[in-house]
Length: 199
Image 1 (cartoon, rainbow, N blue to C red):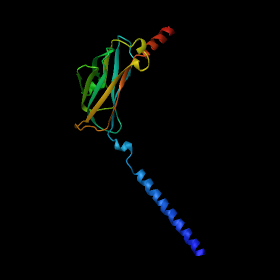
Image 2: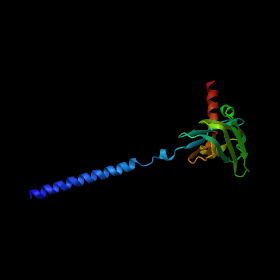
Image 3: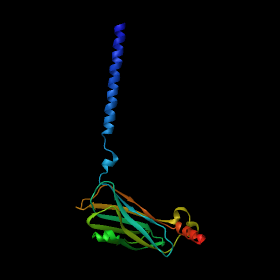
């Protein structure tokens, strides 16, 4: 009987060791997997900015990039579209002084107008394009929402952004995040009211 009890104890001990070993195997397998950051090496974020202008003034929307991992960017395209409702009108796009000094070139194509206005910006660098603001996209503010439209999301003109990019040796960059921009009419009157009150 005592021999049988010892055999049971040994069997349980061996089973515990096997379970511990299996646990270690699974944890090693999980830790050895590829993390999201590793799978997105060379990733690039292309972003449009925001502005809050008054009617009759220009809205300046920046186009900028940020690299998640080191990648030598040579060319970027940004396809911008927004509702054709007469509130804003595209005026021009201008490279920043740093981009001009680096020898970069900017091309702007305007597509046919329908329900949306479509623009395509192409920036080509003479040397690798660095992180930061690349250009300003400038709009004339013609009208602003009034009445029932002047509430919530209707105070904004949203600028969609679809981007692509290539390295300096013309290889397409696979992992890109395109962030939209907006022109927000909500803040300008508040700033004016505060300014008037303070004076």
